[in-house]
Length: 573
Image (spheres, helix red, strand yellow):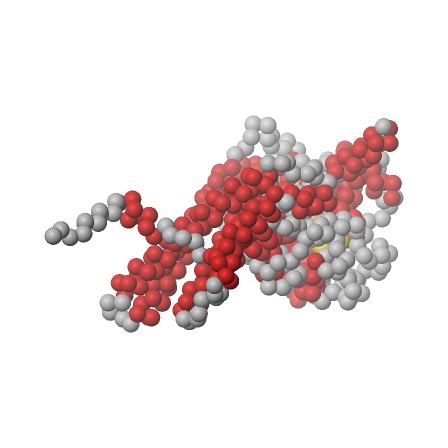
């Protein structure tokens, strides 16, 4: 009598892939489908198929993980299986119904994205958008599923080995902890930090490259030119662009019809000195060398993460002041502001604080009647770090004259405090703070405070767009609807935007990475015409008629020129 045939040994491939094979969790499929559908709804900025597919795949994976955890907890508590007889058959079909709903919703997603694009004047999405995002989402979920099952396999293996020397419940817990620590260290210590360092090194090399058409200034007074304390090669790409671009005295005089001064722009790049304090002191000496403290106005600028200074802000400032202004900035990073904000929120605070302290300390020693008016400015991460550099208690007896902070990130402390303490009835996206003598908020439409309302000793203006996720993101969006979604809505936010637990936070987190790809005047891209209004409020500039302001807006704002040309062509047709 022969026994049963011997089972063939599993192949090496089968053994290696065993942890990743197996049926999907039905509860996970249903919850994943719900989060997937919610992720397709619009948010603050338009998303292309790659970004949308990435977001939707992550949301499906997150919902699936929650479902797997709930199902495991249900079994661990030894609760009875839901449904009997026909109800059980219905529940078995529910995952397939959920997946069908996902597929149908993908084909209907274009009108949602077009509602955001329409607000910003962008054309509708093409017909291939839905299919492409679906492919990307499936690929992302597949990767997450493999990683999740690898995590479970490690936890089970460690737990099985540990049961030889400890009770089973403790062994299972140890397996989960070991797997969590292992995967976290790989993701954070190897992948994230490695990618950050690689990006920093890559950006650093790109920052050091000098294109053949980038020519050092020949004017003796310019930073990087003859006699400059900061060498042309040590200014970085953003610094070189900053000191060589912008209007000169002849440009300003030709526009205004009156004599103008040559604006002074001082910049110190990361290679200019060994540390932040040395760079700040070098910038101060260069500012003194160029006669910056002899001008009527002085602005300490904190650049963005890459060291970039928005030309829309600098050019509008210099035209409004007829060139009678000096500005100084110091680079503190090579990374973009969203990346710096997400990875290291305090990036650049030290440099901004040291530069302001050096300039302010010297400025205070000058006679009050002859020293320049002192202002601070920053965009994005620069706005947050600039705000942190100004300590009101350190200058309570000799305050600065004002600040213009544009696109302040959500982690900006004073901005958050004044926004939360806004007057009742004013919306979060354009608050009114107390009597508006110290702080005012502006957007595309200006400020809700009348222009002739009295100011106090120091003028602070926040220029912000409601469609800017870098400003209006908060982790609280995961469990609480943000106030900016309440009616009335801002004009640059789609009426179709809705809040969904957890998903809305992920949408806005992704939006932060896309915020600088919007058309000018939306998202995190600030228009010169709005800077002009912001600087007028801060500087209190006089002598500019409404017609002159419109001419300046037309000169500096390509978006406004395009709108005027479109209206003219429409009227002509």
